[in-house]
Length: 210
DNA sequence: ACATTAAGTGATT
DNA sequence: AATCACTTAATGT
Image (cartoon, rainbow, N blue to C red):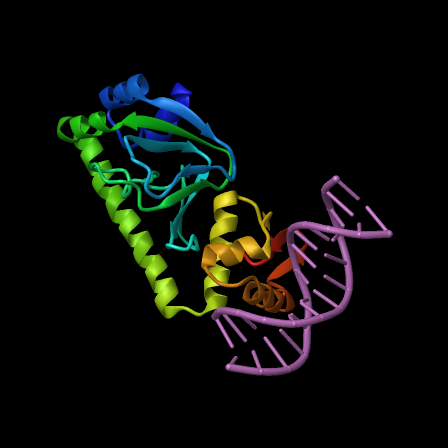
């Protein structure tokens, strides 16, 4: 386990910080599909993603959700940060996309490290920037893109995150993530299949164009 | 055999 | 692009 912390975050942090992370971090496994964080949850510990992938959703009052972005351990700044700072409660829902492992850092340490380690400060700032960009990307998608483009982007994103061109998901789930109806997804997928971009099966989809 | 779930399709707004 | 209504196919009990 100590290996993976250094493997993933060694490029960001100095050794002293890595040692501290090792000391106070609590490792936690999250199974695929498990809700890792819910709207309204008090966030007292900040998660660093060690491996796996997490999808970040913004649910509305009715429980309808919209996918904001995925987080993976290989990302430049791999953590769900925007939601975990300050004393505020989570405004998003985080669901494990695949079996994942996170390292929980107590909130107090985050503040402490912010003044103590330059590398930590940079990491936080970069992380903020990259999350903001991802949210802007999501906004662009909703505001300026048609459903077919959004679906294609979704499929590409998902294959990338899962490292698998075979997506084990249903039309219904996709519709939920994109906040549209299953019928629309089914029709658009059919179009993609006719264009030889995907092959449809019950319960899974093979993406041809990566 | 029957119920449930996933997906396909025409018609309407 | 959304909704309705209906069908078909696969899966579960």
